[in-house]
Length: 170
Image (cartoon, rainbow, N blue to C red; front, side, top):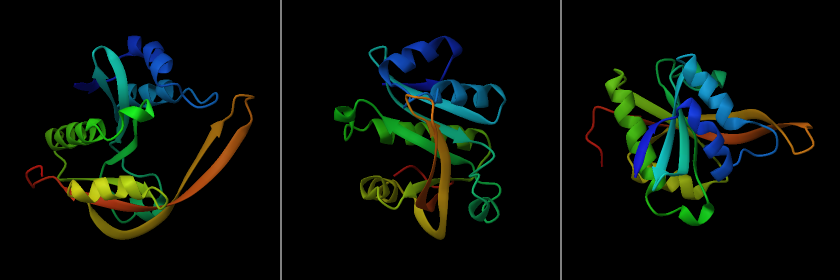
């Protein structure tokens, strides 16, 4: 498996294999943020097919209650593996490890991520990988456009976890 930053010519293949929900154009938005130097948009490739994505937001979590408490902490955001039957095969773990390495190389000593209260499976994975509870809770607010172009607002209750990057990967 190869994990690397997304390239512009890969957006069409990403949409074909990991379709953005509704009319969000998620991959193009993430790529644009990367072009601006605000993030790294990571893609996991297996035999030339994208099987997972995540984004490192170098400016950190946008939720004020997290950003105020951890202003110098980049956030690993939007981790996903596709199709669902590819989950539990180490793809997410490999993406997380690649993000940690990149953050270390960029001089960061920690990285954080949010986990939805309803996603116990992801929370267990992050804890196993060395992320620690911060007792920092927030609402992950976002919007999306459905297939008809209607905008929907969402707010998911989350908790923020942090991993110290000075430690050796576990």
